[in-house]
Length: 578
Image 1 (cartoon, helix red, strand yellow):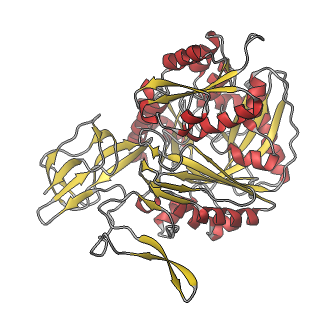
Image 2 (tube, rainbow, N blue to C red):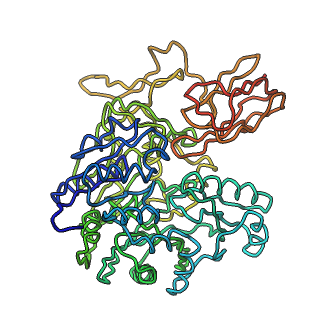
């Protein structure tokens, strides 16, 4: 960057991470440029930035994934640097190279390091050269026709993973040989959709392991800093839900070994900037390298809370060529809860909508990172994450209690939220005692152990399904919060539909309708076909999630009004069953 140009950062992202980057840039006195799609015109990050440019329609391929339009916005705005945030193009080496060709500074790792580590098979090879243990599996991407032979050598259960992605997208657990072909096909499809590459690889599945990741930060002068570990074991379908630092399952000796392995892999890749090296840790203390996320992670705030370091600040300084050699002092414990617009009572069904009320929690060491505000929508075209609650305390138990208190203070109306899940999860004996693993949530749900209580003051958007009215009454001078089933509903609520199901039924039949706006990925029934209750009739993609929409009665398919690729609205009829 020529010395005559003042730094000006374009954030090639949206939502809470864009807001997060804008705040740090303000502290550094750096001007910011936001970009937005047509559905994000009124988004908070657009309002907060010093300048903002429209990219195009809602589709990510026409907006946040469109390299040409992003670079055009950078040129028009006079930006000198680009921060990719996380997701979208954050780990796209081609994008980083195009940024450099345009004479701009990419706030992230060098393209060659990103390419090596973004290719999960190449990253496993790099970890092997660095002496880090890896999970048994294929070292190179696997063609679908070769998956069966490779799987027989690895053994079951195994995991199918996207070779050029992360964040749990394109991952499938396969427990039986007969399920392999379908898992490979679905993983490849998701990988192509989210990352633009369909390659997959296979890895042995480690049951009941912890997901522990190491935060590193490196500069161009050869300094690599290990900033501690995070525990991300509380997850569902490979999507992280709660993260904490430090990990309750890692002692000082194991922490040192994980840190050395992470820094060794970074050296092997000639890594610069912030990155996360992910491991699986077994109950006996054995650990295995999984992958490197060559970007800032969603859960980076818990590291910031226990170290007192602003990771975005040091990302920017490292990108500007400054020496960044950190020796962090760790203090206390931090917990992060990802708040998604999903209904945990309906298998985490996404629920975009207008946020009609949003009250943040308060108190000491309570932080909320969000990209929305009251009166603004959570749109259905992107990820369902709308906020993150991060809490710090002197020890883990106090942090847990403080997090529960903060969750109880949050009020959100207009969308469903995962707050009831977090309240349940934080109160389980397994979490209290630090005994969770990556399959804990799914096993608890399957066993019927998840009990949900909607916090007072929070409610999803009104629908035809009756919802409780939250009121406060005064009895004998005492205020008592209650939930009442009453006006405008004049009858008891109907039994909720099973997760992923939506429709209306009568004695004559059922019409399966879309539970949310989305895109039809597959239609799995045809006219005249016999179906049973619970059978999937189509797969609907919404908010970066595949939702299996099922019939909730036996019958014959009388009408199919959708085809693959259709965009449907909430409540739109899709399949009629007689």
